[in-house]
Image 1 (spheres, one colour):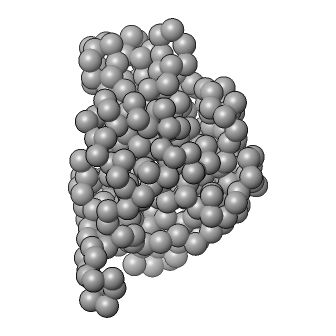
Image 2 (tube, one colour; image 1 turned 180 degrees about the vertical axis):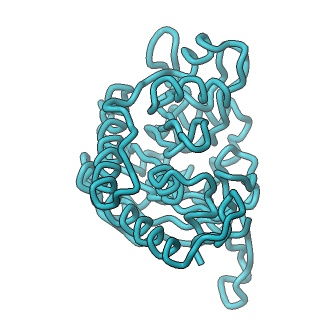
Length: 332
């Protein structure tokens, strides 16, 4: 069952209520990707649940998470297989294989297992995302283009919220008309005494919807706002005299949780120069031996921009649920 029969308040949920919520979940998961694909010119493609270890295709997210792995007795001398944690690198390779032109892209229903994720009201070991990637021109590797793309995605979220409120009387639109852009360095300057989580909480409470730019590189206090792997998002390219980073997170204010709530992580992907720089900064140049990294270093992969949008997370936000178990089948 995709919904716990007990709510976070330990109240029994009726069968009729469960059925109604399932219809609402289905609506969001059907309507939003259609809007997203129209907005970003995306082709839906099939996605793998697992990949071969040692190719560099699987993601290690912040660089420390380990994937679920296993072996298939009849496959290639018992090579280790890994369940995907995200499809950031795989998608970029698919842009090449599908010969996706500049200005167009692809997306997939990603299903992943992240055993290192903490399990709480907003996190599950099971992750479902709309993973998307678009081919870009070298002149589009700029912050202005990233912002334009964020605005398109935010518009798709807003349209889904509006359609949901019209179809189901339970909901009223709460998202602001515009999303606020702010760099993680600016956020640190605004709230120097607060933790990264509390900084996000304050800015989301104030603006309702925020795109937080520049995640992964060290800030003035010597610490990154949050971790990012060195080989997909570009978090080192300078965008001004004061700021770096061509990536970020879409955050919203969740009224039931009274906290910030991440819907998407995305960014302009590393080019050869940024890859080498970020691998060097993190002491991981050994990754250049992997298939994905070797292709990127040789210039064999297209420049791209991409990200993941949490399916259960978007549903949880739009349906104003207080726990992810109310919209997802997993272990809690």
